[in-house]
Image 1 (cartoon, helix red, strand yellow):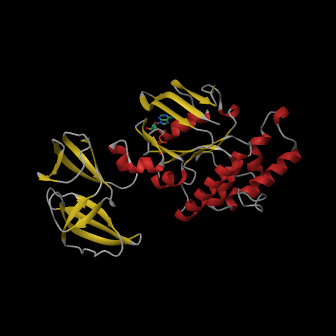
Image 2 (tube, protein in one colour):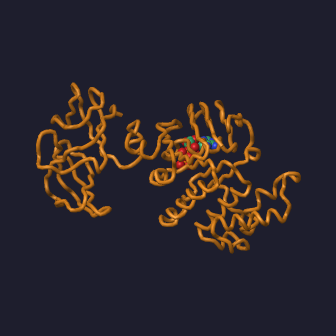
Image 3 (cartoon, protein in one colour):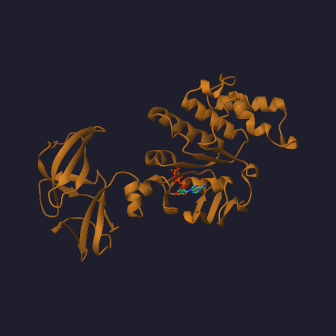
Length: 346
Ligand code: ATP
């Protein structure tokens, strides 16, 4: 199923939570809505779900206008933080819930519901817990049951709001893989909300980066990481070093000294961004950046070096591969920036 969101806006007591958002999820796509707290991710997801309605704009499923259709009639599965499992019901009853509350003529026979619950318990790889209550499960098991409950109604569209929010790192990682697999196996179109960029980059086919009720960029994980469209995306997705620079006639300078970097069409003052892996230590030379090393720590088989620029002191962090000569805290070294981009000054 495809989802199209057209120019969606929503205000809450005068505050623009969503401001003209347009977006498409292609059939079978796994889309992440990524942004800081308050950027409008949940508001957008709730409107796709039919749990809330926009002031203007449209939501289309496979071309059909669903803007005013309530959630119950959209046949979607959702896992929202505040729709926790029902504590007084067994796991099996929780999973069956969406089917048992259907109108009589649409409700499957009791035996079919039981069969469906057994299938779903197998699918979430917890075949023996149907008789337990939510309090008798771990956090990760509870999330899997919440997913089974969402999938019971055989949705084509799965919406998830911070599905792994409260879980510890290893469980999160395992569940991510599992969810990705499930999404593919069931041929779902899925949209999930996260403020965790690693989660978005690892799980999604495309990432929608949001800020202040607007979309900053939509792209594959590689596109948003390697070619951020705005300074906001560059900072929010992945780590970035920032230096205030001046560009004159295409030449970049920092603290009054020339710096070898691509000006990217900017003139005047700007912010130079480069990632920790986009710099190397060299033996001085024109256009390099002088820094003093503050800390060197092992990282991912190589080294993370934290330093401070000698002119107009700013913190910078760079990654060095293994096998290189490692600088020591207190050393002064020269950095050559290997890739960078200048954004207009904020
Ligand atoms: P988080 O990651 O913290 O959940 P979010 O990106 O999902 O953030 P939203 O929950 O969509 O952000 O909220 C966007 C903005 O709209 C916030 O400033 C929030 O305070 C406001 N907002 C959301 N729902 C309501 C509401 N029902 N009434 C008033 N303001 C609201």
